[in-house]
Length: 212
Image 1 (cartoon, helix red, strand yellow):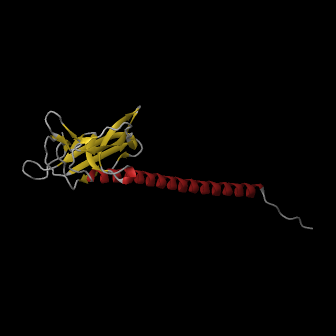
Image 2 (cartoon, rainbow, N blue to C red):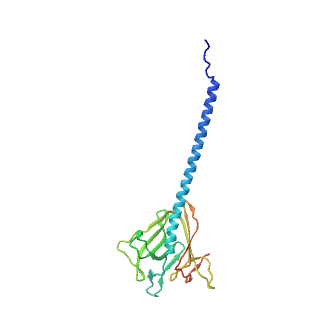
């Protein structure tokens, strides 16, 4: 009787090598696919985060109104819009989902939270040209927790009546035509520049200070 021929040692080793190579290729492909999915999810989260914050800022700044939120007791000068490099104050109607509605001071500013910075917005009710001080003030709402830098600039008409250059400061008794917002965070780096047009902006420079 003839004995059945088995696999040689070389054939077994070759099959093992081919199987290991196939598994390695499959694992590499799986890792690449997983990394692609992770990058896609991270990019989507970044885009959604930026879109949400910039959308909120666009709607709030664009709704700024020519309503005073404070009056200088000595000079009688009113403040309707006070723009600084890292702080912005103006009056706009508060949406119902944020509170009771009506004219409210919007105070967008950089807040030092321990060792890090964050971008916040605080609200205060405005009546008869002044901001009402509440017994239990509402704490500022955080917009960006890992803020690296906030840059605000403002633009209106120049002395010739043409659209002027960007200014580091604006106000207090008039609204600019446009506000530029640049945000940089630890997680996302520099965000796309946001430029908001104010429908009620008069563009009268007032005491605006030119940007360097």
